[in-house]
Length: 381
Ligand SMILES: *Cc1c(COP(=O)(O)O)cnc(C)c1O
Image (cartoon, rainbow, N blue to C red; front, side, top):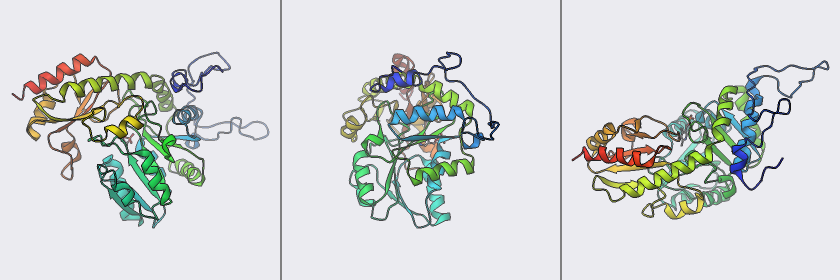
């Protein structure tokens, strides 16, 4: 249909060159029906029966996401964590998960709960040490979970090396690539078995949809079980949210590229600033993960960066509350720039430095963002 298979960007902009065969409409339609009729032979007309098992709008989103990640199939869920929970539900007593010490804290809580309640073994590795993962993946591991770049230090984990280590031990590798969407990183091409996104972040990109997605390299028995679990637990994405997600996806490349450009400009501007101890951003040569990042983030280092403010917690809090353009709010990957004091959000067990401010850089004018940060740091005197 005229789609250049080499250009993911054109594919996603046109929602896979969509044209409604009945009307000629160029926007994928929203089909909200929860139930689907049978014909006079009592056969399902479109193969669908009830929307907890999938609906046409979700299927359109899944088709687009599978192509974007270069996977066999994709499944969308009502949130990122619902997607993770469905994957983890396929683990059995005695199975072993290997995961980073620092990772999305909600999912780590869920893994700890599974370990406690279900007799699943759980081993954590130091994600800042490139040799630690291979050492932690002892034979007998079932699932190696990684996240890259890692929130909020943006340590970069080598996906190809992780896939190697996982496969040698007989495990599968699942990559949380929420912070590095397929604009810049395609984990399945680097050897991962499943890629996960909180689609609430960059994929939708407008802070108005809660969604999760899993994309698999092969539709194997585990993948089928994930589908079964989604249908039985009811974790499927709603049709309207799937429709919004498709709309958001159409501008994914533009948004991500602009956010990456803005973040790199900000990182460079504040790298040697007197009010800042360090800037953590994988796009900076000074970042310990820069070499791997250059290899596996091929089209921008993303919009996530952290500033360690000179001083301690009080100075970081003061700088954050002096910002006028950045919004003090959780989440990431939207068009608007956000700031968060992670240590406060994560609570007493947090290992995040107290002077660290996490920024989700949006697509505003970068001069405005830099000026806002300058005036906030100037308040520290
Ligand atoms: C937000 C987020 C999640 C959880 O996704 P939800 O959509 O909030 O359920 C998981 N991993 C990362 C890296 C995230 O940023």
